[in-house]
Length: 460
Image 1: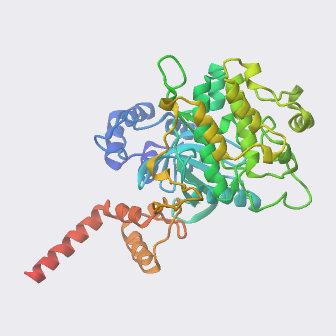
Image 2 (image 1 turned 45 degrees about the vertical axis):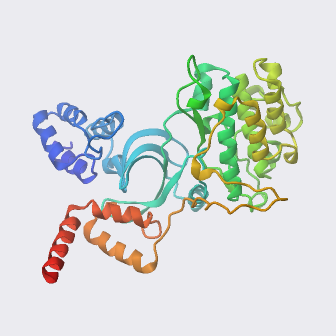
Image 3 (image 1 turned 60 degrees about the vertical axis):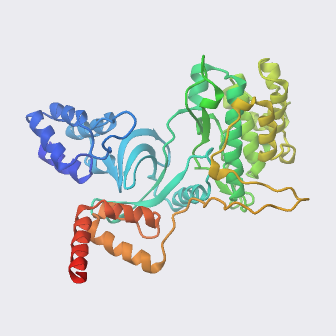
């Protein structure tokens, strides 16, 4: 059976608790596991900055406590792996899928909350799909898409790479549209139209970077802000597109090999996707089906037992349902936009910019989304002289500094950073973040102070 001393060593090694906080909790616990964990939970964690805005987090989350108690009950030996991955503390488990798990985590350097997605399937094809998702997210920068931060191999306690991979992305705190529909039923059309503008903008950014999402559905849409209700305005909420696990480059035509495998979700996939002939307009269809469900409370087509062949026939041949006929509160003009998105032929669905313009025209001025300043780009008319262009925002990448600067930073990281906090070669964060990480190390600051003192002595 594990001991409290072993637990203390693990928690301090994983950075879940500092040595001082552990010592205080151990003393207050008096040798009892439950009391010790209670004390840890009551203290502010070291990673939370003093005076930071927002609700102060618990020093130990329910997920972390469950992992520890399960370990003491003899349930697992790999407790380190369940508490921390590389420079990320795992705070909550958000989901488990066929390829891996999703966690809410705290990145230690730089300090921020993130969503971590892991790949536990060790096949080469699974790894390639996971890497494809990461590369797709690296290129997309839009407020309607969860931002990508990092893709790297998971390292063990000694800092050696393993066969496991992780993606760190923006943690979008909200409620997914599927759950929102489950609790509230059909949603007010102004909210849905506003979210649609966000999501269409995100899809446009994805398509501009050469990818198709292939699995737009309510469960992959995160609604940020208060839920629709009395006193809540559409302008108080927003929507983000999540989960790039099915993403595919548009350059790849058809399937890989002679056997075609359907990818997507039956209720929302357009006719061409069943033959794996996905194009950017395929995402517009899936979003149209998602918006239809948000307005009506059910998908456009429903078949007994979710039969695959019946769904395929419905998407290909069944009449397109009218959202206004199903829910009279939906404006006729909005229902027409949804019908257009659900067209059987891809070239009849319009484009994301066209659909955005149609939806914007339906919304009152105060309900229209205003994109962040860095995403606003003037598009000059073809017949007039183009104004001087504004500098475009830099795409989100994982830049590698020039060889000399990279070598210098790597040298100092090997000296002043512990192995689990060092960047993985080839996946280093921006140079500015690496410098800030080094400047947080007391030993480096002491070294710099000594060097400055020596320089002053030489000068004077």
